[in-house]
Amino acid sequence: MAFGLFSTHDVLIKILGGRYATFQIIFFSVMFSFPLLALMLMRDRASGTLIPVHPWWTALRTAAAITTGASAFYAFSVLPLADTYALLFATPLLITALSVPFLGERVGPHRWGAVAVGLCGVLVVLRPGSADLGSGHIAGITAACTAALASTIVRKIGRDERSAVLMLYPLMANFVLMGCLMPFVYIPMPALDLGMLAVVAALGFTAGLCVIGAYKSADAAVVAPMQYSQILWAAAYGAFFFDESIDTVTWIGVAIIIASGIYIVMRESIIGNSENRPVLRTRSRPETGTTARFRRPLIALRPPEPEADAKAGQPPTP
Image (cartoon, rainbow, N blue to C red):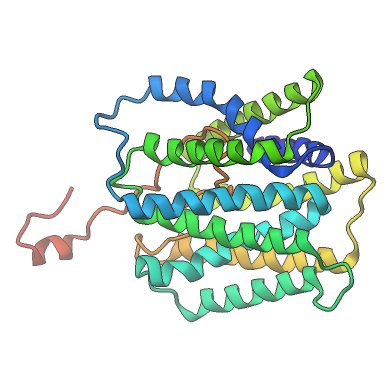
């Protein structure tokens, strides 16, 4: 349900992207998200201020989220839905790669091989040398890279920062930056289009709640691969609304990317070291800084082994 709602959200973005500049769409999406954010902050019982504990990491994550939103919204506007999703599906592969320098994770040859195969799938979708390769594909690749960076940073600082800080800064930065660009791109919007943007904010918020509910009721290894169901929504919505079809080569590339992503998820779900799960412990939907979203809870850690307790001079953990 969550990713069906996200896909509906993306269809509205694509429709509006054919009429208005990306900056204008983001500005109004953020504006309609503020009431939802206020409701979330009213329920936040965590004590503290909105000053980040890690200001430089927070600033880098905010910049990455803003870039992700602008790039993804533009890609949805100019590319077929399936092509955009195929590029965004590379995000877990990039998270795996970034977890080594940013988090000090240990990535073995199996997962490195899956990353390499998955990136080959991206090349299959892009078909370098094809005349169809354009700015939309570049935007999609950029969105995947910056989404992976933002997710990796959340994994690094998420235990120290309040959820309100992680949500508020990208929203506020988007609102200010896109507001400064509005005089150069603004086109008056009828009530119907403004209503569509309000629905975009509501869909993103509701889908985020569904993702949280899914992670609370099932193991992360079960929930994480569900993001790939968006390709089915893309095929249906693309054919129905935009007369799009997915060619055989794109299907092959998508299948390679999905297979690599699922393999990484499966490896992380069975690996012995519970900390070494960079994909399972990050969002399964790219952070765009355009709607209020809860952070999903981290998967539970395994209890300490009795041998480790003994080495530390402590009684075994029950």
